[in-house]
Image (cartoon, rainbow, N blue to C red; front, side):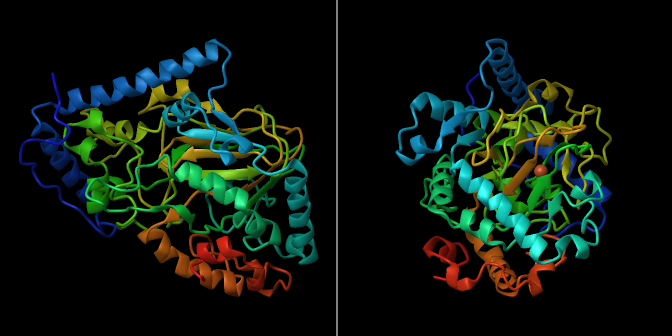
Amino acid sequence: MTLATEPQHTLPPLPHWEETPEDLGAAIRAIKPALRARIEASGRTVAEVFAAAERRVEERIQEIEADRTRGEEVWPVIDYDVIRAGAVRPAELAKLARRGCLVVRGHFPREQALAWDADIVDYVERNDFFEKYTGPGDDFFGSVGSKPEIYPVYWSTAQMQARQSERMSTVQTFLNSLWRHTSKDGTQWFDPDRDALYPDRIRRRPPGADSAGLGTHCDPGTLDLWMTEDYQKAFRHVFDGTVESYDPWDAAHRTTGAQYPGSTMCSAFRTFQGWTALSDMNADQGVLHTVPIPEIMAYLLLRPLLPDVPEDSMCGVRTNQVFPVTKRWHPALYRALSPIPDVKAGDSVWWHCDMIHSVAPVENQKGWGNVMYIPAAPWCARNERYAAQVREAFMSGSSPSDFPAEDYERTWPDRFPPDALNDIGRRGLDLS
Ligand SMILES: [Fe+2]
């Protein structure tokens, strides 16, 4: 059978909710039959379309298992110097597009990363953070433990130097450019050469730590992925029976629309989530895992439409919590769950914004587990909107509005000052 890239028939309309529906159960009961009707207007059943998405994922899982059997690293690993020189080989680019994740070796010199880690310790100690710390401000990372492993600190010199560095900008531009940012009609969905400065926290997990980790989940949204007009357009091929044409690297309609607010929501559009290692970490010490299949979202969005899922359920997805991925609904995906390779301080780790990830549990951790969260969040309508709030938080030393209003740094005199911003930092905050 040949499938047209664009559907050749009139599509039944979908209801949409640009704000969180008041009655979530009713909205779910309304959207599911509407999505099924739209898919079936293509002449294929929902079961056939889901099977096509499943086959695509199954092929990827088998490739990942074959890599493991051959002793090959599942995660692509590329040296910073190769990216900087524009010398990434086509085979490496192809693997990166297939896996949707990357370790950048030597993104920063090791001594630089270790110095940043020490600077952060000095910064929080000088400001009596540990005496003032009143416990986790949210219940997401809060489940990790009562001692602060996640520092709600955003404006240290170390973090800002990394965010506005030439090296960070080079890697962000490289990663942004893997996406199709401009449509055929000329609409530019984001600017790959300019990143919005997205402030996030620090994790410092000490030697000997026990951690329950974080379960498998993904972060790009919750029910809004099925229910808002722009996401329905972004996932148009998933919802119109042409799932083979779904391209996880197409940014169309991802950078403009509404989102359902929640404590785990990220206001920014991120091409990749990421962090920079501030300590050496071995792959068996409670590290990040991903299901390295960027097109997984097609599978996850179609799964609740099958008849074994209760009619008021989206396989456990609710608003105001992360999108859960569970053995109950998605058992095959666990075969692909792959840890990052061992990393050294100064390496950085990146994964496509849709991808399933988790943090493994660890007991009596060997060595530190320290990271600085810095994603790739290219300039677009959504990120420009959020940048206004970031700018205000930067000036006042507040916690950015995506995070609990803990505001520890407001009174800290030695946070990163505005006159130390370079061109990249000013552009990232829209101060240029
Ligand atoms: Fe996450």
